[in-house]
Each structure stands twice: as structure tokens, then as C-alpha cells.
Length: 314
Image 1 (cartoon, rainbow, N blue to C red):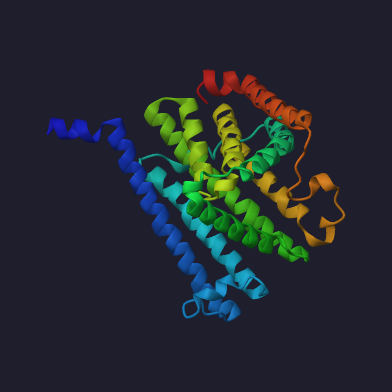
Image 2: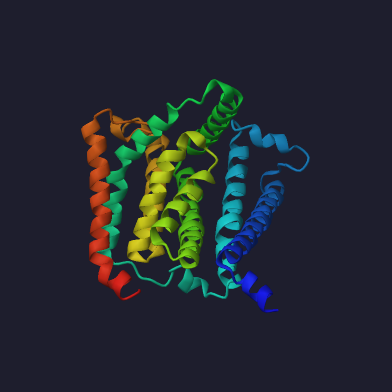
């Protein structure tokens, strides 16, 4: 009996079993969200995806786009938000406390977070550009072709989502593309993964790095891995230093919402070139400055929150 108890209490076993439970929750509730979305589409728009699931590929149809956004919204809730909450319960933790939802963000932290979003944009865009230039060895030609096709498909869906010309479509995009992913992904990755890895291993920086890798990898976009990994590090350290999930939700939301707003039809062509989607600064001075300023802002957050979060254990 003693050996069995010691085995199940071993950190590695505890971590693996709990991660399997979390994965099961994500698959189950993500599926529930998807099925709920598909079930709601027929009475709302008269589209029967059960009989003709291939209709989802017809992105030129406005009704299909609306239906797809509904499915994505409900799937996002099921895949990220519900499992995050239930996982805390499964490890006998109060979700509001464990996910740091009960911490009120300070104004100065929020202001630094907002500046950080825009300060990091040049280096993130540059990383995305560099990531796209990566070519695999000839022996991996089929894999590379598959990755490029997947990337092109994802880009096509994103562009179709962003292509709206009415304010109602803009609001829907802000909710579906910016708000729900910001809340859901931050609860899951920073609130659950980073917290749990840190508590099991006792290693703060290791938890941030591993979570950033998972955060980027789960998007299944090889040619966007490095910029998302960098964003994952930024979000991870902001969460680590502030101890406040609302700060990272704010950063994530503003970053996504900025792209959504800049892609809005009535203002898109009126914006300066540097605000256009896909713009990359060619100056190494700008990109290096972006990285340095971002790092200094995170260091500033650490300095002003050290005693409150790290020393006092808040």
C-alpha cells in the first residue's frame, strides 16, 4: 500500500495523469462546443452541416462565414474556458483563486501592458517574416509542402473572417477573434499550464518557457511558431511578475483587436502603411529597439511588483 501511494504521489506521475485529464476535458468540451454550434446553425441560417459538412469550405458565402464564427466561438469556450475551470476543481483548487481571477489589476501595470503590446509589434512582425523564410531539407519536401498548404488554408480563413465592412461584423470579430481567444487561451495556458508546471516543478522560468512552446504549438502553424513563442514568453513573464491573469488577457485582447480593427473595411485603406497587416520594418534599428524596449518594460513590471508578488507571495 505504501509503495502504491508513493508511486501515485510522484511529481512526474501526478503531472502526467493530470495533463491527461485536462486533455480529455479539452477534447470532450471542445467537441460539445462544436456540436452545439453545428446544431444551432440549421434553425438560425437553414444550413445543414450534418448532411453537407463540405459547405464549411465555401468561405465566399456570408452565411457560411457567420456559421463558422459561431462554431469557432462555442468551440473556443468548450476547448479553453470550460476545461480551465473544471481542471482547477479536479485538483481541489478554487478556480477564481488558482487562475488569479480575483486580483484587481493596477492602473500602472495596465498602462505598461498597453505600451508593451505596441512596442513589441515590430519585432514580432520581423520574427514572422523570418519564420516564413525557413526551408526544410530536401528529404522533408512533402512535410514542407503540407505545412505550407496548411498555412495557406489558415491564412485564407483568417482573411475571410477579417473581411467585414459593417460595424456589426466588426463587433462580432472583436468578440470571436479577440475577446474569446484572449480569455480562453490565457486561462488555459497561463492560468492552468504555467501555474501547474510551476507548482509541480518549482521552476518559474521553466514553466514560462514550456508554456510558451505549448502556446505556439497548439496553433498548428509552423510558419508562425517563433513569433507566437515570443509572444508566449512576453505573456508568461507578465503573468509571472504581476500574478494577475487580467493583465495577460488585456495584452492578448489588445494585440488581437488591433489586427481586427486595422482590417476593418471602411478604414483599412486609410491607415498608414505601417499599420497594414503583414507590414515588416526592414530597419534593424527599429526591430532591435522593439526587442530592447519590450524587455525593459517587462523588467520594469518586475521591479514595481517584486515586493508585492514575489516577496509577499501575492
